[in-house]
Amino acid sequence: MSAGVIRSIRDLVVSVEFDGDGPEVGELVIVGNSGKTVLLVNKLDSGSIAVCLNIFGDKAIQKNMSVERTSRSIEVPVGLPTIGRVFDALGRPLDGEPLNQSTDLQYKNVLQVPTRNHSFSAARPEIMETGIKVIDFFTPFVKGRKIGIIGGAGVGKTVLTMELIHNVAKSGQGLSFFAGIGERIREGHELYNTLKDRDMLRNTCMFFGQMDQNPVQRVLVALTAVASAEFFRDEQKKDILFFADNMYRYVQAHNELSTILEQIPSEGGYEPTIFSDVKSLQDRLSSNENGSITAVQTVYVPADDLSDPAVQMIHHELDSVIVLSRKVAEQGIRPAVDLIHTTSSLLSPDIVGKRHYDLSVRVQALLQKHESLKNIISIIGENELSPTDRGDFAKAKALIKFFSQFMFVTEDLNGRPGEFVSRSETLGGVERILSSSL
Image (tube, rainbow, N blue to C red):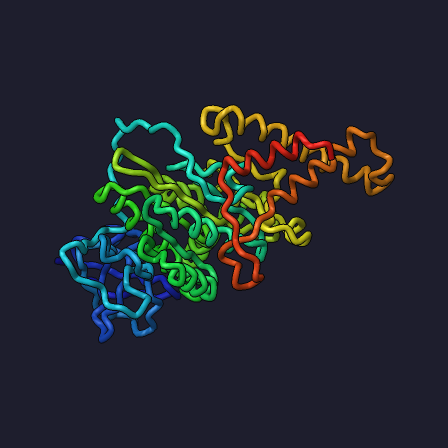
């Protein structure tokens, strides 16, 4: 097997020259130093040069050090012993407990994409109740589809994700996988303790590559979590709930790597491979004849700009989009959902039924009217409106209040018990408001 020599080091990028056949893209190579530094082959240049990424940012490497091939890629533990555990981007436990080396433990290449079966046909849409009124009504949670929670900093994306994990995972509807990508370490601790205190770790597997880690690990943690979910879907025939917080940070990590690799940015300022970076990950969050992956992804919006190229790129991959608004949050409404801009392609009679669909059309019309009447009221006052407009405006305000809700995961913070409201109860509540004479 050919050996190599380090020719240059630039931040996390290490160029290695090999004699004979070089390594494959995605292969791990080991530096011949005391720490056996691990490098990941990112691309191959002419002249048997492999451009590698220093996964752990190890500083104990120097020019002219020897490098050995491993002929293998990143392999992480998968199987039943991983459920209830917390791992890093390379599948190493973060919870301080040893990994049970039983016969159920296997290893999977995180960069290997499963083969597709083109004969697979989608099953009839199956709605999963979340118990959160605004989600069950505006963005129905359909098995095997993708939902995005979009918003700026501090508007409640992580809290809403934690509530979804609590409500949906607690019902036992499949295994839950959580990927913490580039978010705060504090939020990871809070989520872990929340699930542990509520005895929900037994159906959950967690992966973290947080804000303090380098971009290589933040990119890899998303792929590691997806690879583990794929194993349980394909080998264990399980239905998977996949939560990713935060997809924008995944793009951001790729963008940082692109800068380090001296790639020319795209017109929008992001890496030139942004489309393939997003698409390749999203395509793996799919369903097949073995099982389904239902994905919930938070998306940070830089400067509250929904037209940001990265946000738009992720948006196109989602079936439903829940938009969280700072203006709504400032009014004390939780969850702070912008009911006007929240959309779902799944809100159709074929999926949710005629009753739900007709109610959604009427509610959206009232909310749009409420938005247009607000400017008029600020000038002439509500009393100057016609009786019909006053009634519609009052109903819209009642609906906005109705869709606010106390969360189970914030009980310890505000002292208010959480609420779980079934979809039928939500539809009944909406009907009562629409038929009332406010």
